[in-house]
Image 1 (cartoon, rainbow, N blue to C red):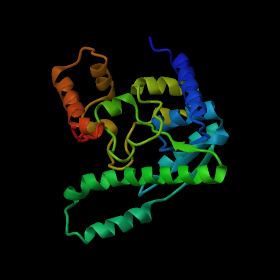
Image 2: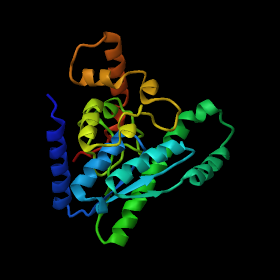
Image 3: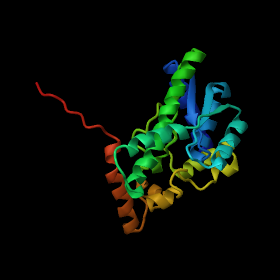
Image 4: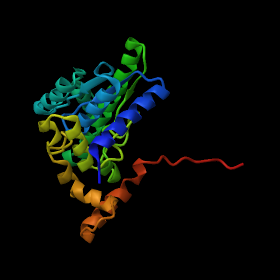
Length: 251
């Protein structure tokens, strides 16, 4: 039986010990307005204190409602929130790509979706370095990916898959929500239908499977064979995201 209160306390202790051991001072977190970043914000604030948490919204032709939801989180926990709009940066990059040729929207679709999280990750690391300099203590970047997303590779390689610490990586979506309830993450954020804010589709629509079914596969619970096969195929097809093949010379 999953004990959300007990698990929350263990995660908070894990964060504190990691920061103490590595002489770290603060954390930078992209706050999307969704449950995962909301829960990470709550955990980091409890572990480190609100004065050591920097939240960042990074819109790029994004919904204003997502930023409003992100502000609900920062206002509740009391940490600093800044906004870095990368729309012009994205547009400049796209203008350079146009010089390579005339591509169809279909050809550009996947590249366009993935470049945004990569630009956002660059922004978070820039701010971590900047705040380390101006605050005189080391800031690192927190990830927000949960176990279900990671299992099927639902993250951008070189984008939101990159972080310095990930405290949700061994928690299913349902477990994240339960911990969010303990942390009192604003309900509008915690129970919001998850989506990437980029494609106009929910996460489950994009994946073609439910998060609850992904959890069943990982927990080896009974599941329709066709659905199980699809989830395992997603998992296998994303394994390249986890390892960089490295040639080792022989003596």
